[in-house]
Every structure is written in structure tokens, then in C-alpha cells.
Image (cartoon, rainbow, N blue to C red; front, side):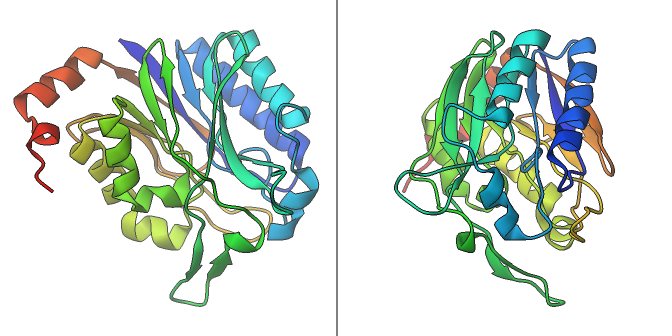
Length: 268
């Protein structure tokens, strides 16, 4: 059994305050026995304007946010999936939204750049254009950990089942989906999409979300959760900041995959 933590936050435009709060929540997770923790999308910074992220984007491999992530993993003895942070892209004037994975000694083991950018016009006048301030990623990424193989995704990726089927085919046993789902889209789709990704791939899903009213006026849905391969919600937090804990059992996942071998039955 492996205890995991999905960390929910209500991040603001104040970088140091966000890191301080994230640190408190990671300490809580570690003290509760978590060996793997996943932070939400934009955990370190949600600017007053979308362009504000350009000022905090770091070069790959160096910068205060990356150093903070490595230090937290090392000092707390956690494998840490670092939500998402803006990293400079040498091939573009715009950064990528990168999810970095650190092992329990603080060494970076993987980097996934968000593939699908949130360019939508929602009912009620909400409009988002991530492509105005971000460059899309180029490839899916899995990483081997002591707890199983992780498939990495970020927020809007949740709506693209082919990405997660790719991860299942690549042997992923745990899918991590750090997010900042809007309240509007979250109310409509978050729970069913998270559970669907677990069910159709017979994998554990760790889905931390932002969850509240942010300093820039944006409202996020929350409902961070951990879901088992049968689609059962093992832990959930609706609003505010906090930690969702759950114990993952690899034997249970294999039991479900053996009893319902849908991954072997596909005919395309």
C-alpha cells in the first residue's frame, strides 16, 4: 500500500505566500504518511492577468520555484508531482506550463509540458485563451516511481481520453491530473471526467484542483480527489485548501484488470 496526497489550494498572485501555504500542506501530507504528493495546477502563482506568468517563468533547471520543489521533496522525503509552473521555452517567446516530478532525494525525474491549451468561450461570457500566453507541449510523459508508473497530465488534458489511453498502453498505473478547473466547467464535468479516466483505463487517478475564489477574480471548482481503478472516490475535498489522502493498493488494480480485461479487448 502507498499513501498518496492530492493537495488543494486557492493560489493568489503572491508567489511567496503560495509557496508558504503549499509547504504547510505538504508537511501535513508527509506527517500523515504520504509517500507521493501532487500539487494543483498554478500552485505557485495565479496572476492578476494571464500575462503576469511571463514575469515568473523560469529557465529549465534553475529558479526559485524549481529549487523550492526540490527542497520540499528532499526535506520531507516525498515523491512530489509539482502541479504546473511556467518554464521558458528556448524555441518560443512564450513559456510552457510544465509539471515537474521530483524523487524523495530532491532530484528531478520527469517533466511534462501541457499538451492541450484552454482556449474556450463559456456560457455567461467567460473566455480563456491560454495560447496567448503559453506554448503547447510536444509529447506525453510517463515516469517510473517506487509506487508504480505515473502518466502525467494537466487540467484541460482531462478532456482528451486518447492521452490517457496512451498512458495505459505505456503501462501507467497511476494518472496524475493537477488542475485549476473553472467553477463553471467543474460543476458540469469535473467529477464525471475524473472518474471516467480511472474507469476506462483501470488506473488510479490523483486529481488535485484549485478550489475557491482567487485574488484575480477567477473562481475554481475544487473537489480534489483520488479515485480507484473501479471508479470509486477514495477521498475528496470540495472547497478551500487542504489535503486529500488515500492508500493505493497495486494488487487491487491488477485484480480489477484481470477481472475486467477491457484494455485487452479493444478492437479499433
